[in-house]
Length: 248
Image: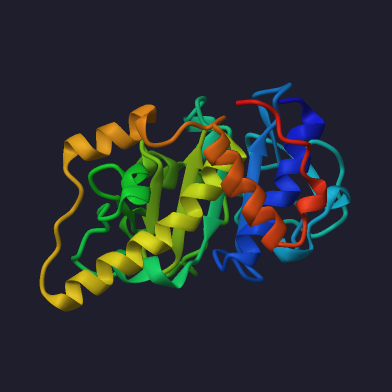
């Protein structure tokens, strides 16, 4: 995808995540610059529902704006910059505070995949506790590059990391992929919580997870993926921004 296409999808991704309840006034999504792997795009400090093209700012991997910027910026842009710095394979990042995932970052119960659309989690989602390295006097926000790097290292090679008492960060190979993951992560958490209330949980097996993650259950450029993206965009009132569907 070229620069114009990823910026268009970044606007759509913001609107979709807001409409689907993954983010509210807080939370954000970014995308790596397809022309320069050392830079990424992220909105200025704005509720995702209102993000448009003129709100997008380009950043370097240190979290600094690439050009002088007078508008307020997201404090936690260092989550994004650190993940891009640590993970050259990642093209898009979401940070959100979806309520359904929060219990799994403050309890002994791990967040594991229990539904087919939750297979991207892998075997278990790691939890990052800012206090482990930075003490108990932080405000739980990732406000500098050092904290961002520590979080990115906890994410490791995975797709999602929980942040104790805060939310989650998700990383993927495209905007569509990271939006999809961020929508189904809370759904998987709700299913897991309901199963725990009933008294037992049967997570997906390693074989089931591998089959789903290998492409047998999800193909990024498939008609099935386009169907979801088109559905979410129209629900969010930005379907007019979509290009015409192409064969995939």
